[in-house]
Structures are given as C-alpha cells and as structure tokens.
Image (tube, rainbow, N blue to C red; front, top):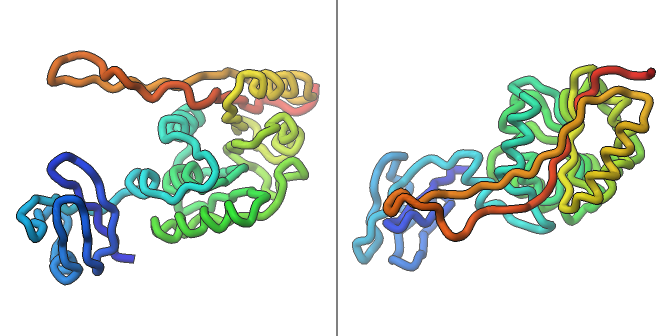
Length: 247
C-alpha cells in the first residue's frame, strides 16, 4: 500500500493513501497531485497551506493505528525492547495482542524473524490484523489461544505479557524461555505486579527481577522549562530474566 505522511505547518500529522484526495482543516490535496510527489517534497493545499511529505515509519503507523482495547504506550514498548536487548532475529511472543500496537513495535525490531501473538478475542485480533496490514508488517502471526494454557514456541528470547493475570503465565513461560531470556509483565496496578513477582520467586526456576515505572516529561526549549502536562503513569513493567531451571 502506497502510504504518505503529511505534516502541516503546525506539525499535525496525516497518514494517507498515496492515491486519494486528502481533506484537512487547511484545504484539499488531490490524489493525482499526491501520487506525483516523493518524500522530501512540499505540497500546497488548494488554499496555499504547506504540507511536508515524508515516508511513514513504524512509529507513525503506531500513532495512527486503530484502537480497540487500551494499548500500551510507546514509551513502555520502547523500555521493554531496551531492557531486554532484543534485536533482529530474536524470538518473541507477545500475549494480549489487543490492537497490536506493541506487537508492531517489537516485530519491526526482530524482523525478519516472525513474532507470535497470543490473543483470546477474535474482535481484537481482527483489529490487530488490519493494523499490521496497513503498516505493511508481514512477520507477525496471531494465535487465538489463551497463553495461560501453554506456549507452543520454545527457546524464546522474550515473552511480553499484557494480560490481566500475568502470574498465570509464569509456568508456561518457564517452559518456553531459553536460559537468559526474559518474561515481562505490563500491569496497570502494583497489586498485579506483586502477584506476578510472588509467583516468579515461588517457582522452581531462578530469575533476576526488577519492576519499573516509565514516566516521560517533555521540555519546551522556547522558554526552557518543562511542559505542564506529561505522559505519566501508564503501567508498571516487571522484567524477569530466566537464569536457571530447578533448584
């Protein structure tokens, strides 16, 4: 699909098909004119407003993805990728796919390796499939299966959990992770994180464990002070690295 990202003079973004008329607050750009442009060019609407044309990246598709259930924030997906060190070729399972936004981020990193999503709701899985298709992501497979009941894949580098009862996935994770691999849990409440932690330390396996909360505060450098609003608490993320099985 030929997609373009248009950015207006106030830095608002419009993710559009490259062959359709675009109607925005500041005018119209014809699909015929848009087809002739290449990334880096500047378009003008019919009333003269400028639009910069760029090729969209994965972050743009994540920002514009269709939402169904609550999605994980980009800052949380980024810290999961950063703390676990996944790379191209890493084997990753994502559970609680929801709208597929976290899976989009992780799949972009591990490509060409295929990322496996576990999701129990067909309506959520369908939203995720459409988001993957729009972004041109082909290295994702969705399984309509409850991860609490077991993980088919083995020798996994990362199991990313965004599920209501992550502690129920600890035993399946132990069986599927490679030694040195991570299971992470994203939970809105600290009580969920504590139950996940307790299940980890009560298991026969050995883990290194830490829990973090990622807060992002932007700064306005015109006046050199932070913005009054910030992207604060979204969830707690627990990182558990498997370092041994059995006692």
